[in-house]
Image 1 (tube, rainbow, N blue to C red):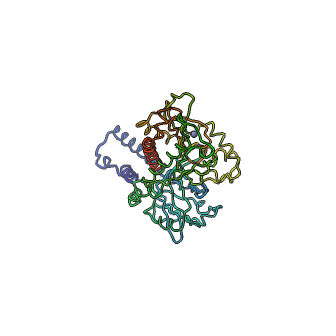
Image 2 (image 1 turned 90 degrees about the vertical axis):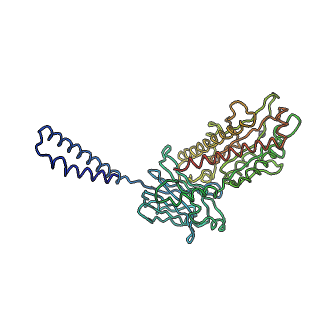
Image 3 (image 1 turned 30 degrees about the horizontal axis):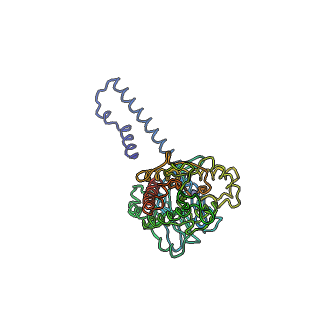
Length: 436
Ligand SMILES: [Zn+2]
């Protein structure tokens, strides 16, 4: 396009047709023609300048960062000066993770990067065709790609392309080799038309991990209902029903923090979510109030002030690198560490709020809600900095009607069905949001 425009301009400036067959031209008209030529020359020079600038500042992937995420996950971050189209998948012999980046340069810094954690043994950059850069990460241990997405500039960070992977067995790795399991940006360029087909299959390949936390348990009965039922019993029943329903969907791996009547400290529940590298954590409770008329369902996410304090405490804890996905905090100073934890937590809180929104949307179709259904509070159980978390208060056990409802499996199934819908919406929405 630019090329045509350019040629046209050159032709019209140097071989002006109107001039060739002009015959007698008045002075006024001659001036007009010259003005026209001058204007064209100015436009042409401007276009040339623009072209040179664009060439000089060609989009580049500037560097790569490798970090741990959870106990068995890793995050790969590519810093770039613009967003770009991509495709990422696994290959064998040697075992490697491949990122094909389209219409972008790759700085030599990427190849030079040494992985201190040792799960990437070597990084190589190649050019399979003129518009494609291929970055291959040779893997020491087998992993599969959990998600890949582009992050818009935020604070001091520019564009980031993020690939989250998770350690798996050799067998699982082998089952995920090839572009059939690719994650790509759906950008309709000619180069990855082929991968567009496979993109539709890819999200289902990486199952989302959900951890459901039945509140209380063991020595802690939780609230005691109107007729004497314990909250811990209702929450466990609900958690099991929800897990069964989510399992049926086939796109989630669901864990419970407890599947029997045992006591688990709040901190440990958060740890469980992080251990499983959860994409979503949901703690289930049923409220109680002195006012026996109080009723309705509510959804809680962590409040901002509480989370800042938590971020501070987390920063002080010994294993900082483990706290936050993808960023090796040991490399950074305390201030930077605080900022990074803060950012991760803010993103997590946004996601939690987003999910809470979907919960309210779905729940209001079938059950009674409290006013301002989505609420914020400093629940310890919601404080994983890197796992979107919500706490569901299913209703008031102190209310005779609601206690009775919550005791019915049919009612709990209704709640589980709405929750399942909300979870589906949340992940579908996230997939669209993370693709450019
Ligand atoms: Zn509770």
